[in-house]
Amino acid sequence: MRRTAGASIAAGVLATALLAGAPASAASGDPAFGWSSPEGEVHRDVAVSGSGRVFSVSLPGPGAQEQSWLEHGRWLEWSRFDVPASSQGGVIAGPGNYAMAVTGSVSWLFNGTGWDGPVTITAQDVARSKLVGNKDGDAALLWSAPGGRSYLSRLDRGGTWVTRRVPSVLVDAPRDVAINNAGKVTVVWAAPKGTTAEIRRTVIQPGATTWSPSVALGTVDHPRPRLRLVTEGGGRETLLARDTLWRQSTSTTMPTYQFRTSNRAELAAGDSLTRLVWAGTVGDEHRFYTRSAGTSWGPRTLVWSSEGPSDCPESPWFGVGMVPSGRSYVAVAVRTDVGETTEVCGGPFATLVTLDRFDGYLNRAGLDTALQTTPYQIVGGTSGPVVVEYEPGNWTVDWRMQFHDR
Image 1 (tube, rainbow, N blue to C red):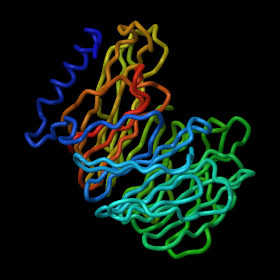
Image 2: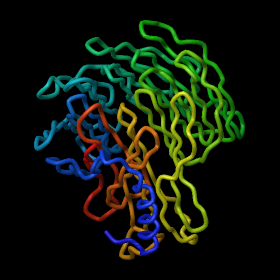
Image 3: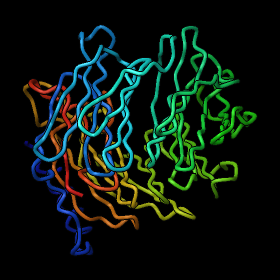
Image 4: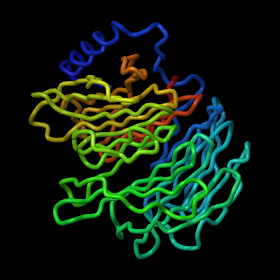
């Protein structure tokens, strides 16, 4: 993989400076031993169980192909099970070898060696769905029915699906969902008001049958802002609406306004820590910054930088993931043109940076160049590899899952 001399020097200088204080126990960052990198034609949602087993479900675009599939693997083992095609769904994992996948309006349960199912979640057609889970394997599926009304289907591990309408959510409104380790489900959405949007929130507690009254958190300067909601295992939530961030001081208080950040920011959460990552430019240099929050927010830290000529308008892309203990993984890529020319826009160059829970820089590992159509998906569990799923952006591979040691 080639890169410009400027990008090499900038990245090298930063890595040298940050690694000088790195502890001897820093993880290698190399691809995990015994794992190959599965490649495919479509995006896959990924989860890692407590035993370190990796699970994925393929989600082809509507009409893209006739089949979806469920996959699972550990070390030299990798299995695939074909299911009816669906562009909606996801997969969550829990302790041991537990995993549950959703495709469209049905779910599939991993029984330790293979997949049982399908189990019907709803008789309605499912659209705009998002599946989230907690460490015990409880699941929540936020989805839209024909006509655009929002529903939440909840599955306590070992139980059956229970579906309730989410009141007050406007049809087709931007929204997000999270479930904490206690089983509380939170839904947030943006209610457009002219050129702005009011950000609202409602919760349903474990064992409850009704939602809390919806509460307005504040307003953002965009009618359809991108929403990102994460929850720490203990239940403390952080919400990013476009460039505005709210956070709970405890799991039982309302989220309050914290600060403004970049329009291009990502969040990840562990058991007791949340990480914010955002991109910026200084002159001809792309920079990636982070802040972490436990009981309070830490200082801004420079994660990585690379030169990129100012005549290149495309921004770099990135993603962030966190394992429960708080170690974070930040994948970043400087934009490159697809075609014969490779020495364009300061790349191609991509890297996976590992940070400890105190924002200390542990190491970085190389990645193939990524397209700018989707962010990186970075997933880790209590054990096993960290999985990076992304579009490499070359002529032979559409999507790739790459495994890294912790």
